[in-house]
Image (cartoon, rainbow, N blue to C red):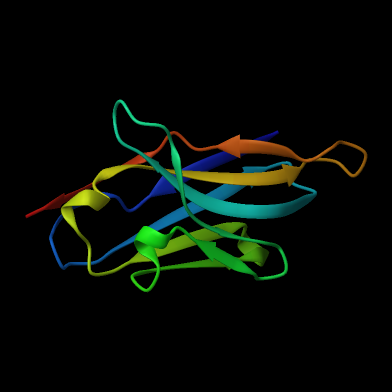
Amino acid sequence: QVQVVESGGGLVQAGGSLRLSCKASGTIFSINDMGWYRQVTGNERELVATTTSGGSTDYADAVKGRFTISRDNANHVVSLQMGSLKPEDTAVYFCSIEAKYASWIPALRYWGKGTQVTVSS
C-alpha cells in the first residue's frame, strides 16, 4: 500500500534551522492532505502544519511565522522548513498523509515512524 518515511531530524541550537522531509511511496492513486505533527513523551500528538492538495496551508499558532510547509506533488514529498527554533520545539516529528491507493478505496491516513528534533538552549 503506502509507506511514509521522514528524514532530516537532529540536534540544533536555539535560533537555528532544520528542514524535515517526508516521502510517500508504494501504490498511490492520489494524496489529499499532507502534514506534520509532533509529540513529546507523555503528551498528545499535536498538529504542526498541514497542506491540502490544492495548496492551502494551516499552522499551529506556536509555529506561525517560523515554520513553512511545502509539498512536491509529482514526487509525493512534503517538507517542513523550521526556523528560529526554540527548546520547546523539541519533539518527535511525524509525517502524516491522507491517500488513496486505488480509485474505489476511501482515503486512509498513513503515518511515518517519526524523526527526533532536539533544540538545545
